[in-house]
Amino acid sequence: SEPVAVSLGQALQLTNILRDLSEDAPLTDLRAQRLLAAYDIPWGDPHRTLAHPRFGSVCKELAALADQRFKDAGTGISNCDSGKMRPANLMLENYKRVLEKLVERGWDRLDEPVSLGRAQKLWILLRYSII
Image (cartoon, rainbow, N blue to C red; front, top):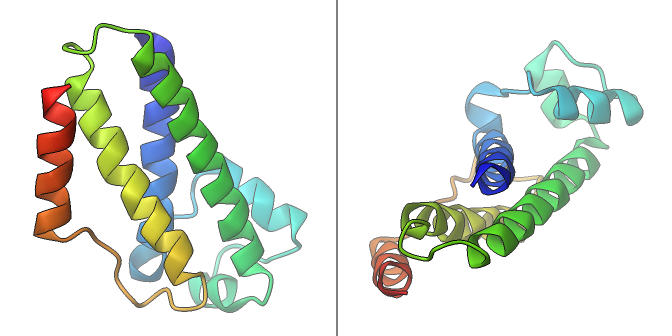
């Protein structure tokens, strides 16, 4: 359904932004730019932006927004045919766990990569492809 696609797409995009900050600082997302401005963080020089003392607050807000979009998508998925929603549900469960790991790692160690291990990916695949 369209609401699932919109919510899940936004959640995945925000998670990718947060995951890849140290690699390429993809802060071209308008939500991120508005948050940077709200926290009076200069945008343009990625190194200055990422090192800003208030940058973690921006990341926390983006993570909270992504988490809400995952919840919205989950609600939408639960109201649809589960067979047709399996791919969306797999993406949701995979990326939601990446977001959880990012939040757990924190925003002061952006060079520390975050990913899911094979066992966790396999568990997600088995768990959510059977429902």
